[in-house]
Image 1 (cartoon, rainbow, N blue to C red):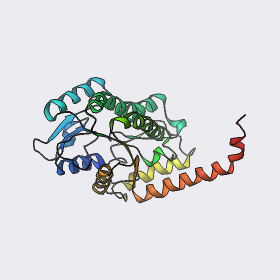
Image 2: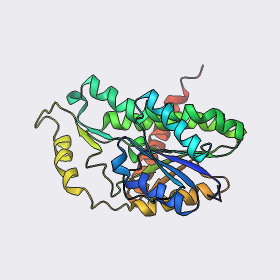
Image 3: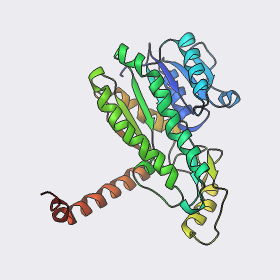
Image 4: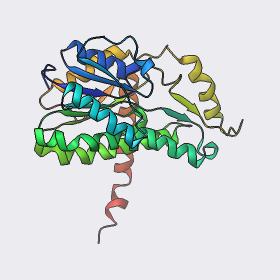
Length: 277
């Protein structure tokens, strides 16, 4: 992945934030880029030349996926790099979240990206080139109050990616999982959905997040342009890493999580091993 020229990228969730920054960076490097969003007007301001195609794509609609892939392949050629970035955050305690809200979160954050990728796998495998980039989150490693279902979708993306990576290794197609921390994106703006049911005072930590995250929008430490550059650097490595954490806060949080797991594993090692007969 050291050359972006003669590559076709499909980037979901390219209307803002990390997805938009990646679409712009790949295009600047010479790639042909299909930038997608549910609503085309949100893609305004992207470079206007024949190497960048704006495509409407609703990942929760199989017909929309098929139509978008056909349009991209007809206009730009076979897709080489798939960036699964689209998604949203659902904020609410488990007790506050309805089944319909939880299922909708999985449709957008997990089943949509996996359906798009599956639609493109045959071509990637037959050409034996390309890459898959799945944008997870620090929540894919460590949960947070009010984000149980969002974290579950990202855990699912990570587990799915781990198996997909092994399946595609013989064909030379890397699967890179990106684990961002807090970035200056619309994640706490239009990309955040609140559970309709609220139990005030029952879960103070969730109440605090409902209030605090609105105020923090636009002031997060992570810069989308720098995050996109880090991802391109990782893709250019031979081989690319399996996972890339981006953002200093995410590095600290994930390091602490893994250390806690190692400490607990060691503390209970004898009990764990005693299960063998």
